[in-house]
Image (tube, rainbow, N blue to C red; front, side, top):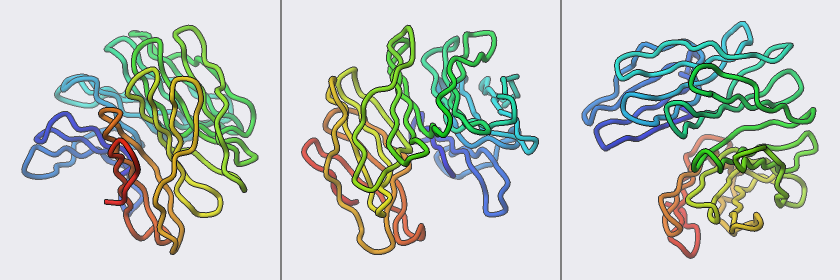
Length: 260
């Protein structure tokens, strides 16, 4: 599974691919996981409320996929695909009539915006840029993260009017960012990996992004795919180590990151 959304201890959703490479959406009701009928190709999921959610991904014909949950079932919603094909990697919603989705086309990444009636392309990045994660605090504060073809970290910020690149540190030898979360306009986290095989974490302090030390297993490399924070003193980051064979969970206690 590549994406998870928890509404309560008895209402959790996850989306991703199975060992047979098929995609599926599953639901936890407090006792067991159940597969829920959904359009094939959904990789990322975001719930705005119990009866309003988005799932995004890509189809076998190399077109973008967006599907919406109405509290009872998932249904496809038309979405634009760049010339040459493309798929969506992440989605986040601020309200029933406002959402963002990011994806990658043949040579460029792009951002789609939901205006309450239709998905429209809002931005296309420079060639070679790959966007992998995004989050939104509200209608005037959103982040998207990824990397460039030169293996440099890449971060975009939405200020309510436009998307713009924000300088971000890149580790020596190169690095990639996969996930991002924000607590406030002056507190956010982004996670990924260095090309040297270490996990990589950066923090936004309201003015700049700076690297924060984190524990990293020394055998088989490590990488972090997702991060979620509930306050300035509590955050979780998840990924893998040991050549992808072992799960990795880190916790921020307000002072430092610790392996769980």
